[in-house]
Amino acid sequence: MIATLMGKIDEKRVDGSVVIDVSGVGYGVYVTVSDFNFVLVGGQTKIYIHEHIREDSHDLFGFLHGSTKVLFEQLLSVKNVGPKVALAVLGIGTGDDVKAAIAAGDVKFLQTAKGVGKRAAEQIVVELRDKVGLVASSDAEYLVTRGGINLADEAVMALVALGYSESDAQSSLQNVSTDLPLEERIKKALQA
Image (tube, rainbow, N blue to C red; front, side, top):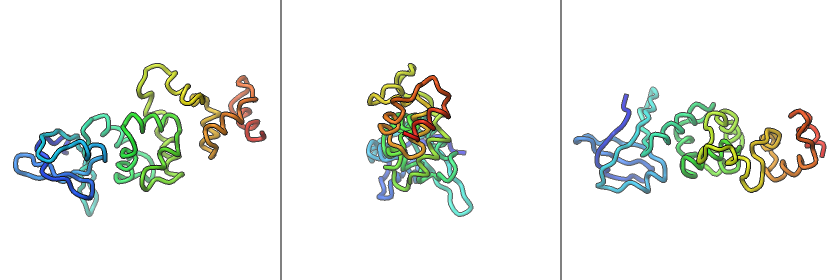
């Protein structure tokens, strides 16, 4: 198994991959858009590698940061998400942006990735929300105050998963008591 490659970037290809020369051997590695833009031809770099081996191919996917590789592998664990789709999701923002979107249930942001439809974005949120954790802050206020919308509220997240926008979900729950059980709050919001 190849865990990392360290060498000189020989070329950047139009398919979004780079060729890294490691002691005279050139490895073709698919990288995220941000990593592709960051590396320089002729520059020395270390890339964290994920090998994707199938019957008819052996592809390498590389990341400048180990945490991005971990997020990539988490995305691969989602049903119907392959390496190209996972790479596209990582191309819509930084790793922290993607984690925050998943944790917040921001399906629309995830849909901006090439090849990611509404169902795939929802599947990513459902399967990874609890796995990505809080991103930029150790205190839970990070998720509670995005744009004044309480994204930590499970009822809001349930309505978003049903197709409501975050603001519509929040406003439909505005007059529903937070003391009610989750199911009741969702029913009352749907009736409103």
